Length: 260
Length: 267
Image 1 (cartoon, rainbow over the protein chains, first blue to last red):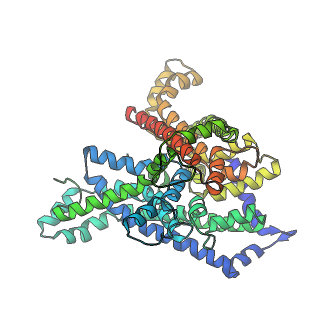
Image 2 (tube, rainbow over the protein chains, first blue to last red):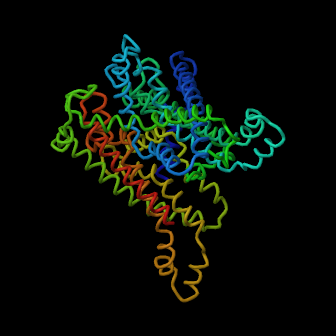
Image 3 (cartoon, rainbow over the protein chains, first blue to last red):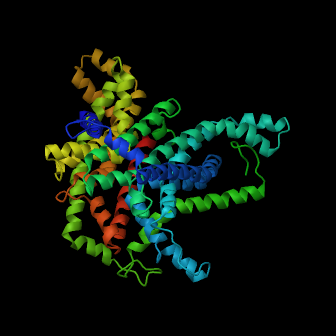
């Protein structure tokens, strides 16, 4: 563990120590230069949007997963777990092949005449949102499905026998009961999205970069370690803070093994 | 469809809508991987739709290039070493965390699992900062140490899960029948927790083999791993060799996780 904690501590130190003394210059720079503020805003916005998209796609999928059985259920479980089995890079590459101006989607769209010009789907925010949502979806589906499985069907029968119409049963009974899973999924997706690097780097544009890319840029291109360390510290503290606040709800171990 | 779970009957129309929606989401989930597999058999020089023909030339290309083979070999060596180190350390840590009764045990567990929640890019930057000083950048052992950090939590989680479900009286019985601590452990405990250790080892292997971000910083120019080679391949040459490599990777990980599932079923 020394291998992990020591470098992290050094990292935080590097961010506040430079030019022979303690300094907050890197943080001041991050929070005053408009370009950097824009990166922070982009990062939060993207993570938020990815969370919403994942929720919209994931909730119905989780529902279908818990209510189906047999072969269909098997297919759905594999579809949800398969992303865990395939490397991130492979899937990012797959999206590039699909979304590229000469890619699968545009070729089909042009051929069928749905569009006249190739759609700009990659190297911009659209590409990042599509790629990240796909990769984050299982993290949304698994906690929700785990909670859905534990909902006692008798509660809904009770609501039904008391005369509640389907939408009422959903709004007053089912939605509140599955809320913990939704919250866990949203938090998980949001936190992981904040620090995402591979997808934005491959599918994103050069103008709207995210925090992780800015860290990489400062590390490997301009060699500004102090600033890279400050950026990493901001990301680290934000992530750990959210985990600390939501920790009781989000037990890491159960998240990784909650759904079988 | 009768429904034991859920919020009641949906009605045929909504049921159909939900199925169509589910099908689309499933397509979204598996589409990219399937596309990559299809493209790897493409005979054209560039990514082209529809493929003009089918061939295995990109597989041949991969196996004829030393830079690809070296990268694959580096990845394999690093992953094997990481698996060994992480499995041994992780198993010991899990034993300590589950069995130990010391103050701060929960805190220690949380600390051991932090690499899971810390963004990989932060881990990578931190590890790189240290390795630059220790001159570990561009070495296999540097990569192994970096990957061990990523892999350790997976081993700990898997082994702890088995340990928690284990009946300690079995080991106590062995001890009371005269077996020494080591003998009781190797003959009784170890075989019982073996499924967890194996699953943890597989996760560790995959965590190392798939890692791009830490390797991007730590591998330098001398110890390039497969994901790092793919990364530059994706960015600078759009030929389908990457698709061929990806297809083989998908195959390997499907086999690996199939094995994990089998282990779980048997448990």
